Image (cartoon, rainbow, N blue to C red):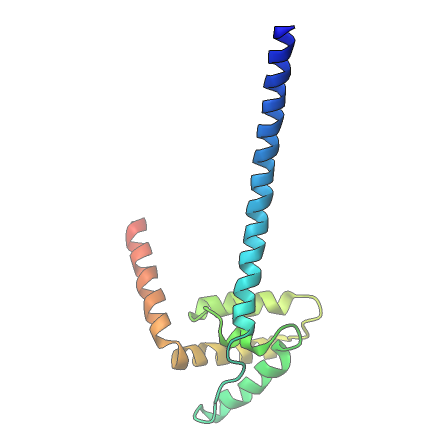
Length: 144
């Protein structure tokens, strides 16, 4: 009887342990989803327009394309407040958005959107560009 009790106890503890481990993976995924939602909410609730009156005429026109095309799927504030600043980041982001079903972003629009986002980052996010560029330089040195 004692042996049966021990075996039952071991099996019960094993099952609970496995269940706890599975829950922690689910909790981790839930935590990540929550973090993403909170991050996007912060971006969405930031400033929702840019004063481009001092930008070159071409960039002002490209800003209109950004407003027209990008707000089909999300708020303009998500882009404006984004942590993206480097040309490579914007390139990946615009490509990803262009591939989304129903985006209606044609190649000619994507180029204008990209050019505006890079220009705007140079104007409004110069400090962030410096930080990211320096960090990328450190990463490259560490890999050597």
